[in-house]
Length: 274
Image 1 (tube, one colour):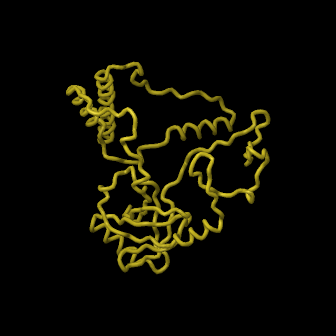
Image 2 (cartoon, one colour):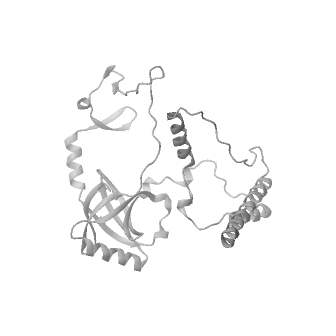
Image 3 (tube, rainbow, N blue to C red):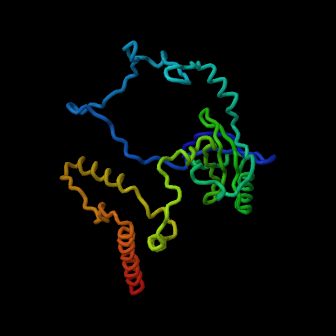
């Protein structure tokens, strides 16, 4: 597993040398853009719209646009100096909180923490302390020149660090348009909605879910590679889109879910008979 960062994690006077590894990966199927006539990959050029010339990397500078078409130019030396001043290779746990106190909107990206040389005992100590306390650590870390707020918790016997957004990075719900304030809810509709939720409530098992679009896209690519005839897959009949009556839509959804448990029971019975 590729190491993206090396440093240490500390809580109190305990210091643990660790390595950081990305805990998730993007499995999107990346498609290239080709010229329709000859199927050659399209290249992208950096062109200055004023000078109308292609610009080389060495002729590009970075800047901050503080108002429309007004910039503050920052040279590489200034940025590098600032980066070194703030990039201390350490994760300091500032305090401990309960996981349920942090809304999921704050979570950004997950990383596995593995002990580096000499860090096994301290790593195991922090892991056990977090398990027994039921708490998670709130910390700060700088990754790729960006200071991040993070939490450290236990995931399947591994310390997991998750970067989280700072409060000012989360937009205000008051800015979301067209949110109803106090809408009168019909009791019968609410009861049916609650019944539907009850019917669809199960224990969360992530392995049950898959990216159907990615699977279908990969199958299409394989078919086209082999020169096979491509046919569209048939979808299950859905609730009509023109069903505007809320109660009818709820009842149709409820009727649809009632069929599923019966199918599961028949399978279970067959296994017992076998």
